[in-house]
Amino acid sequence: MTTSKFSKFDEFGFERAEDFDYDEYEKFMSVYLTILAKQAKTWSRLMMSNRPIKKTARLKQYVRKGIPLSMRSQVWSIVGNVSKLKEEYGQDLYRQMLKKSVSADIKEIITVDIPRTFPENIYFNQTPENQAALYRILYAFAAHNPYIGYCQGLNYIAGLLLLVTKDEDASFWLLRVLVEKILPDYYSRTMDGVIIDIEVFSRLVKKKYPEISQLMTTVDMPWALIITKWFICLFAEVLPIETVLRIWDCLFYEGSKIIFRVGLTLIKHYRSELLACDDIMSLVECFKMIVQNPFSLNCHTFIKEMFSGIGSLPMSLIEDLRKQVSSERAANKTTFGNRKG
Image 1 (tube, rainbow, N blue to C red):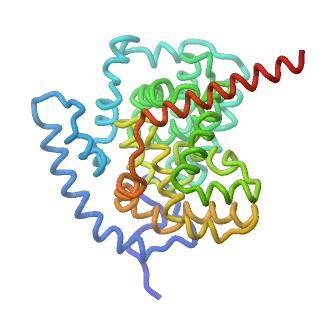
Image 2 (cartoon, rainbow, N blue to C red; image 1 turned 90 degrees about the vertical axis):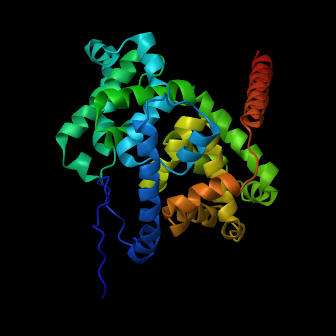
């Protein structure tokens, strides 16, 4: 029996599954390490130059090819325009929010969710200091956003930010960028943003892969059953960690359309497997399978297909669909209200 040179824990502290394919992973890493080394040189030259880093077509390509782990926190902050937020709200906002009070209900919910956050991760389940740091980040965020307070799913996002940045203040600001700037209304009490985007996604699937859309209708499976977690957790706790981080590289730079690209890439790649399902149970199992298969483990190939395999997906199309869905929901509410009256 051969043994792998890789630990049962990855570099971020996540325990690999019992059926983890180490042979496939070693094949992937033998190629990917060379790519990482090349990217590290490219980003080092960029970050050490005296010129300010601005959004350009070249920088977009650099981001799509991956940001080195050692530079992720800094680059996410730059492309997420954290400096502008700090100018507006003050550098000391995080510590100020820790001094504010939040409701007992919010504190209790956060407290309950902390040990549930990445329970298989040794940096959380064996490090009380990290759990305490995560609590403080979520507390400060709730204090700054009383309209949102706390929503399940934020713990995974803040937790992963903390694993990457290893810094509470940086994680707090990046959480604000994701929730307030990139994904407004995803984590509100009504979760209108997620509800609308799930419907937008269903229409994109109908447009690009009508046979999958028809299958979902035939077996009477709502898209929300599958993709709510995808969207709420931004694929954390869904896809392999390095793939998630490569997705987040693009998400910080290009915005929310990346979430749709990821979902559509999974649908396209596993179209045949999905179409082979003939009832809702087999379809649910198939969706569980597709996020665990080797395709999503090879983050470099996955990101390449995400941009080259599903065709054009302009933000203008997504915004138009969002407006359509919002208008229809508003009209339905009005109709329902009139009938009720």
